[in-house]
Image 1 (cartoon, helix red, strand yellow):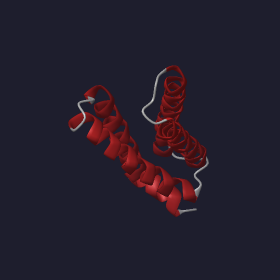
Image 2: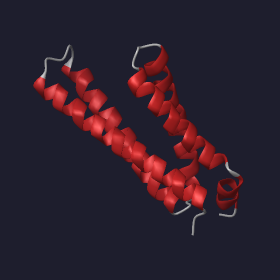
Image 3: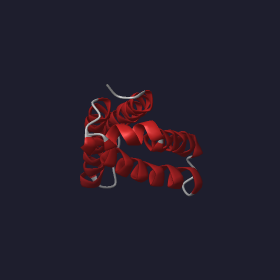
Image 4: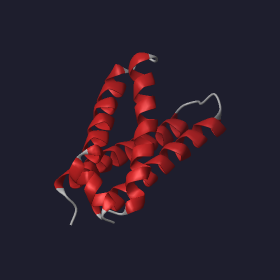
Length: 124
């Protein structure tokens, strides 16, 4: 059984995966209901966010099961989300998206860096 820090990390990753899936759906709706400058780029953005959501969802299940591969994938995806959150909050004027995203990323990375989480993955 996974230690509490790993379970909480899995819950945070699950929230992020659900939010990314919602964003992908929202982008898909916008692609069909508005006039995109480039339909190909709009569809590619939907696919990219969707793949990101699926990868984070799979990693969430892996964290819950304390699978060794999941920790590295989650950390990698958190770094990408952190970059997006940083640019959203401080470069693009989207603090309403960037700041909560940065808080989730910081929480996730903290939970995965706790001694109990590191030991859980070291034993596997």
